Length: 136
Image (cartoon, rainbow, N blue to C red; front, side, top):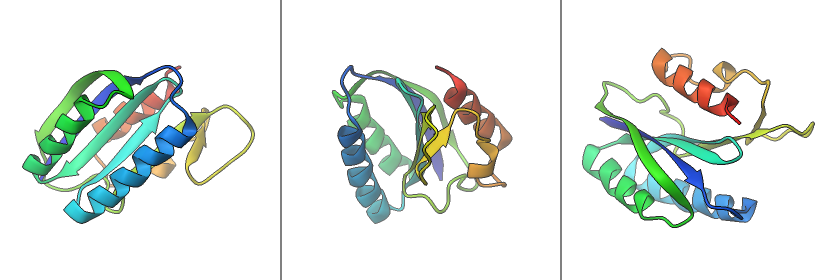
């Protein structure tokens, strides 16, 4: 089992429809490969965790690096792990939203990220995503 986490910056003009397309394709592909993960969007940047067979995760990451919908892709974690932090999520997605509306896919800036995550997930990973989501 291997976990990779990266950050990147969205290109100007990236729409909700673009993100929906990314999620739909990712979820479908990840289901087939038993890749799990989490994608967070803080309004300008992305942070994503991918978990699964190392070769599969690296192959996906290579495609991500070459995707022209974002730039500045930087790997911040690449490590073997004993178990998944996101065992139920082929690719869950959360974005920071300052509006009053709510959705299953949206967290507001002041919401607790801890409540969204697997309680058994590594604390350093929880901290990393919590800090990222709070950045603006």
